[in-house]
Length: 227
Picture 1 (cartoon, rainbow, N blue to C red):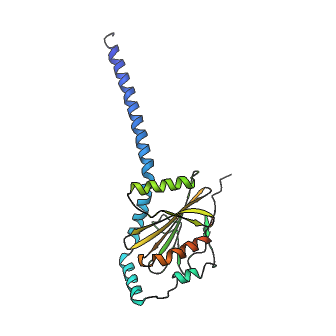
Picture 2: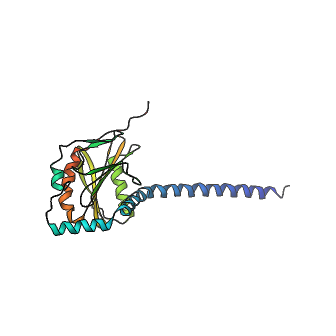
């Protein structure tokens, strides 16, 4: 019996060290998952847009626009700018409201999409709005998260700042296939807001200021705690 005692103590110590190594490995895995969460979210968002885009349709519409010059169309930049005092759209859950682009069609809870609502316009443009309940996310933390994602993807999203009403927002843009995407991110209370607008590159400089004016009609709601 005396000769077995050291062996049992050695096995117990080995098991303890193995458990410590398992806990440390789990801690490292959790840290990696936290760092990658935002990167995966942005990548998935871009992938969904790319998969849904009908590139041949976009190319055809852009070609017709170039051939016809300044063609006036329902829902174009001038139409949007002239309709900022129009009827408001209110999210059924009360998370936001805004005056949507005039003469754009609405798709509520679009299939296979992360957005709460999507508005579709001419030249294969669209605008999606997503709201997410946060756990005390601050604007500074939001900026840090977006910058971390940008570094992890080695991407340049031309990060800048803008205002949505009184709320400071992160303004970014990225070239995607044959379209350029304008993105606005900001937080209000317990909600994070993500607005994404896809614009043909040839029209981007014309439409960006119009959409920034449109976003001044955006009014955030809030999620009420259950009683």
